[in-house]
Length: 137
Image (cartoon, rainbow, N blue to C red; front, side, top):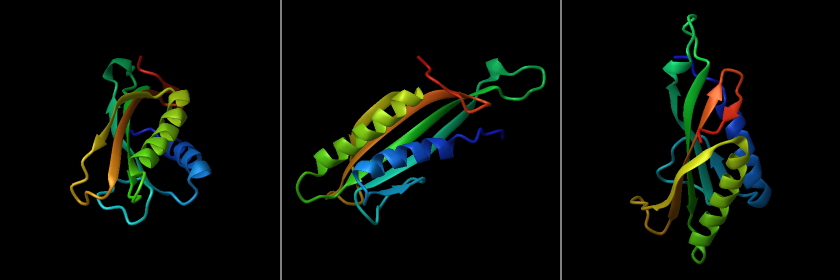
């Protein structure tokens, strides 16, 4: 597998933006099914796919299609939906200028704990082997 090393750049930019407004937010780079601290944001490079149409005779990938999945959790007794939406907006405002397109953003049922509110958003882009990010629009 020839994964491009873009995950750290995406994670750092997004985490820094969220932490600037929510300094106590727990930020992780793996899927979380039962957060141990709140609010919590999971930022995961969930898909890294080959663009076969961009390979040359060297058989080295020049571009890859990537998907980033972000889960935002809040468990505030009052205002958990608003808090999760505010944090999700920070994520959107961070990833859009990096050329990511949001393909979905929706509340997700949290079967582990109904007292938690969760928003799941997915973003897609194309990345070249120099880690330049291109919108897929």
